[in-house]
Amino acid sequence: MYGTSVSQARIEAAIRGAAKRAAQDDAVLVVALLGHGITPGQNPTLYLMAGDSHADEIGSAVNVSELLTQAVETPGLPGVIAIVDTCHAGGATPDLRSLDAGVRGGAARLSLLMGVGATQAAYGLAFSRGFVEVLEEGVGGGGEFLYPAAVLDAVRDAVPGQDVRLVEFDGAQFGGRPWLARNARHRIRAGDVVGPIANEELQLALDPLGCSALLQTPVTGVQELERLRLMLCDHSSGSAEELAWALRVVDGVLDGLRTVELLTTSWPGSRPTSERLRRALWSAAGRAAGRLPESSGGELLRDAVEFLRLRVPRVHETPTTPLALFVAALAAEDALDAGERKLAAWAHAVGAEVELSDAFEALRERGSKARLRLVVSLHAAVADEWPEVLEVWLLDRGEVHAHKDFTCMPEQGGVEQRLATVLRWASVQARSLGARLQRVEIAASAALLLRWHPEETDFGERLGVAYDVVLRWSERLCPPDHLWWINERARKKLEAMSSCATGSAPVDWLGEHEAEVNELRKLLGNDTYGRAIAVARRPPRFEQVMEVLLAYAPIVLWPYADSCAPEQFRTALDRFWHLLPAEFCEAYRRSWAQRALSEPDGREQLAKWRTVWHDTEWLDFCDWFEQFTIEEENSV
Image (cartoon, rainbow, N blue to C red; front, side, top):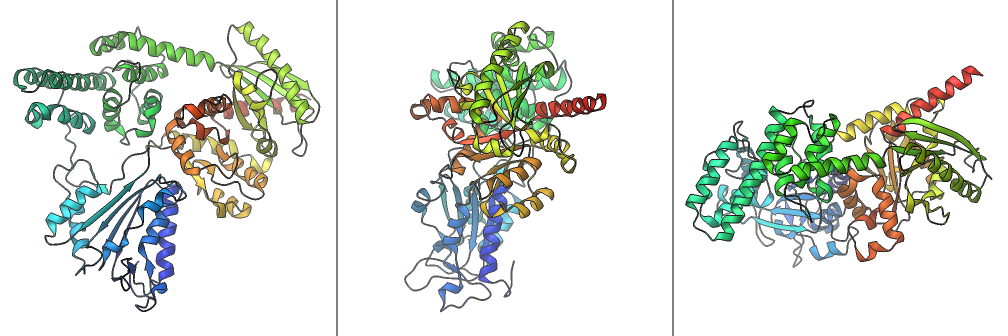
């Protein structure tokens, strides 16, 4: 926006709105403020003059530091990068100490590039012109992304004499450092199979030995890297410890190259896709999942193996354990086992024979736990009250093994008392199959889901202590005519969420002013929210809001109480998304046992929130149930 028609109100509304949209898209907000700035009297605060501003009326101008503070405090916003080119631009710096006491508790990121200091004048938009020149031409040796500090140095070179300033605040514990632009000079050479992670680790390891010049020749395969290893032993001048560290890094890069070769040239299953790679990466990364690479295609494969081999923290594990988990996850999708010839050859080459066997065993154990699912439906309830009948199914690998109806008193106590009988029946059925029941799925109306916590049902021990309890919306079992489309739409959204390239949780946040039912229905109908939906604050008439949300979103999350912190929960979602919804159950268990107080790890934030979760397994069951109901009606 530019020109005399741009008012103070338009500028402020535009930046607030942009911050909100960026937060919804999990995107960094980049904002540039160029023009005429003033600092009144002895006050160093910068005010940007708008089309309707008057120099003698400060209230008519834009308080830049205040506006940037509001943007940074936007819930869910990964970061703000601001460029200010005005006279006295240095006066745009917010009170950084106040961010720690703000609504996000300091869990925010800000990079502020300013053309001059608070007492200096700026001329001819020299800073902005130099800034654009740097972005267009790129920075030599700057890597794939340009970060604010690198841009600052380049602008100083491009515009000599310009007293450029940079102020940064980084209080976020998770998520990647915000970058300003892709580097126009960065080119990925087709023959260079070593990516940025390996290059950085090699550089750090070789510098102390005086051998960084050995990296000038691109590494195009395993043989070149093996030669590098021999040259390193011959030419190094550092200590034995430094040499040992460098050799460990080279061995790690070699393991990565051998893994890339396996998956691109000799993989015995179907060719891995970007979506499959991301699923396996989530599975193997564990607690480091919040820092996953954001590349795609061939770069994703290269970056994934480098990340897993060189960057994932390992506690009581060998260096190749994450790689073995990654390969095993891909192999399991192709029904391959650890004894397959090419997999065994790879494991021998990287020294991960035992790790690969352990990874397959872990997958088998996980599959055994997920084999049986007990579905308990309260869909027989009338007018959102408690039902007189619980309809129950035991599913074995997704197929109905047993089905039974259980009568109960139409009240919470009656339903919970009958649940104990249902679990006893299901346990007997499970033993006959030689398997163990781990998951219990409770389907109920929106009203009951909001006020009932079935995992807290006590029959000697809490239901959620012995089982993973997942909440479902019973309306999806056999949707009414006006909602016939909801399950197919949910499938499409789940597919889009699973192919999301970012390492962040695929969640859209619903603000308080968007929770009015009619407006919300319009936004959802236009597909404004295309992913899971998290409600930042419990809105008025929450039951009606929930009815609308559950029809349009496959996954809905909301706080126990308004005191729950959305920003901290967002961080936990990024970290544990690949383990959800089961990890909510683990979080509740830790909370009941009060382990969260002594061992905080992010799960304590999950324990403060609720979710209704509809995955493809549930949608498959809904399709079967709808067909089963139709056949029963026809037979009658």
